[in-house]
Length: 138
Image 1 (cartoon, helix red, strand yellow):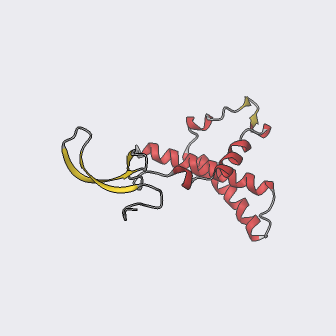
Image 2: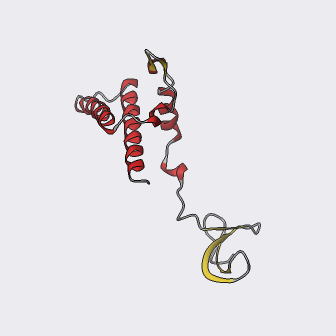
Image 3: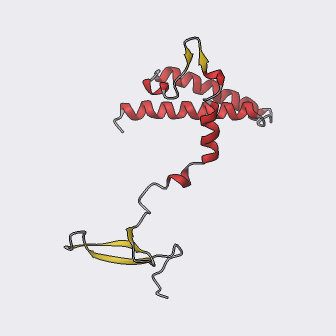
């Protein structure tokens, strides 16, 4: 077996041609046993390793609960994208963080209420990040 095989089952090679067959800078590629080639993935986001499906499922399910109903009716899942301002987000984020902190300090972090507070904190963090990213054109 060649010494350039990886634990992923592919070979590391240097490619000297681009997709048109012209000479190009050497690029590392993965060559799989069946002959398929792909560039290296180490510069690409690996979403499934950064995010937890169990947490995201719980988070989304929390916002499907009837408590999300308002006097105007049930909120659309993405109504937050219309924006409600950083001041409102920060106030909500602070309230939920404060609630979690009190539970932590009292050693009462168990229960569904804590998970709901953490979901609300995650919601506010994402909303604030979105606001800031839009301001900065990110």
